Length: 340
Image 1 (tube, rainbow, N blue to C red):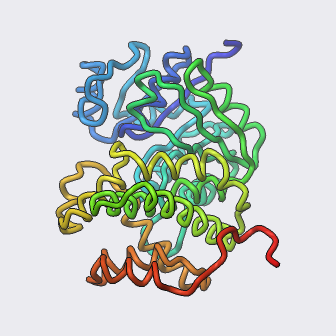
Image 2 (cartoon, rainbow, N blue to C red):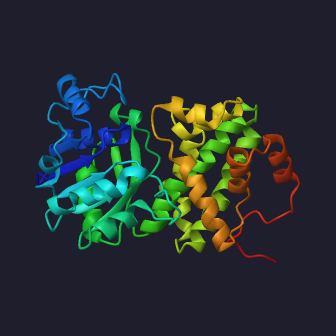
């Protein structure tokens, strides 16, 4: 390693802890910041995040703290792994603490609540003008990262400097980072797939087979690409790790929080009860609200989003929604091909 960097990871959830750990293992000076002082002290003493990653020992060189200034004041690179509802607050807190040349990267896969349809990297651009901003996204279960499973992710930024810095910092024998300049597309892929993970979880709980899951995955990908294209993203981005890669992972495993939400809903549990019992943030529920509102504004056809919204928030019966989806107007399969 040619240069030892000072890196801060903000957010003591599963993914923030996982990437902080691999950066520390690589020899960089690494701080993992947690808002709760008690949790930070407990993790620092135990060398384990018992709440989110129990049973996985953390690198002895990883510094765990609740002191935000200590974590970010000298940072060359900052990863913000904060849930969407608190993201802007934390971005504002670090503004006066950062070095002018610090690169800031969002790892949060959500949309800011409130109806403005603001992505996390857009919050960073608003709150931290003058800093190079990026997004890290991909099929990345934290438990598998800390277990040393081979994993790949995507860093997306308009800044080649930010891309190079993140690739150099995160690269290891088990973690590979690919580059993309379509920041909006990569970020939308990470946010949108959470909606479809809920749908796939519901389908699995209701006895849907492999045919059903394959249909849902491919039609989900079509909706994601359609929506993202209207938002100005490159639909080809969704053929990569941050699109179809993350979609397949999140929609096919009970390690996904959003899949577990859908599975519980498919078993008949009320949404409020499911979310309360999860113990972690399931971004897909808020993302569904925001995407449904935005899709209606832009008149984007998203039948799966509309159907799930009806079930979760309008009291519609799942069987009725499924019937409408299956018997609705016929359509094309691949929308970006040449039609004859």
